[in-house]
Image 1 (tube, rainbow, N blue to C red):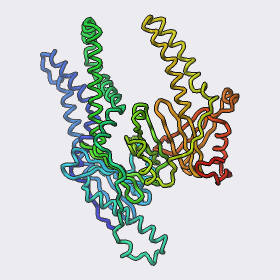
Image 2 (spheres, rainbow, N blue to C red):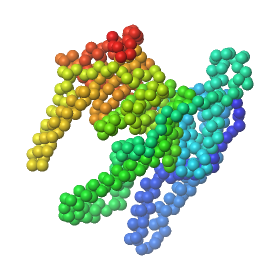
Image 3 (cartoon, helix red, strand yellow):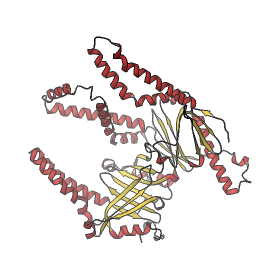
Length: 506
């Protein structure tokens, strides 16, 4: 294996500078805007008024020099079936990553990368989930260099398999140096229609509101809230119609921004199967390529919110082991939006060991009150308070009672489990409906809970946890028959009956 050392592309220095600048953007804006306001009221022109600007220039210079040093000192090479990295100026650091521990490479092409045909490569290993960062990150390298890393990984794995299967002596150099075959099959591609439906029905509007809130809190010392309050009081005098129109316009604008951002994020979303890996590609301004080893998939979750369920759409999420805690792709949207009637074939193609058409055992009729009784009890004081203090319009709060009862009945109808030879399937609802498919060997824990009230009705709740990212993922179904849950507990035990056939509980 070559010991030649490789450097990152020079644009890496710019990327490092932009990354450092992004972390300081809010403090910089606050300092300069605040100093600008002060300068308007100051007439002495003393040099101390420029101290914030001097500090700002020095900080920018430091970030730029730091970015250049990081680029110059960062090198990587391949040696003894390892990816080796060396970086640092005053404290030199080395990191050796065995190829056998590398689970996947994720690629990102930002606006800075694309003109130079570069990519950012994130290296994920089985142990990445215990840290807040990925195992390694190559800020900017050419696509050819990224392909070379993949080939080195493939050759290393092939050498290991060859030595295991045919012996070290028979693993000839010519046999090992053959380029590994890369079988690629396109599984799914989102149409522009589906992307627009996804964008229109997503929860991205909440992100826009959060961004506005964060922006406002950063400028709380600068924004003249007293003046704004006086203006709002005057504005309120114009009447209810103008206020309602303004609120509607703001919500509409936020929704449009959310639709645009989601469309850009999921543009040309494609699922490709390459040998034993799933490859997701998406994005217009920033292209992303996420690789998921099929062997790391811990469970499959189907999510149907009421609006999408009405039109027969759903979202399919795969829970993947490993990954850094700040990685947004650990709960990966395998199918961000797809017709539920069309997911059986691609899911069976990707996960042949799963059964996606289980026979469900549902919650019994005697469990119905458990789904709405507690919610109905705590909402009664709320209804009384609203009706009293906001009479007569507060009487509309009486509608909350029937709404909670109907929601509870809806949750009862959705609750169920299915037990197969090697798989547990759970189905439940909060507002959205969740269907969780988990292989027995992937389950980290299984728990049964029973309250005194459930015991009187021979009911219980079941919860299971699997490894997903750093925090894990769990699924819980409440108020099922105790006999059905005890059967699952027996099945999960090492001495459990291994002969339970698919869809045929014992």
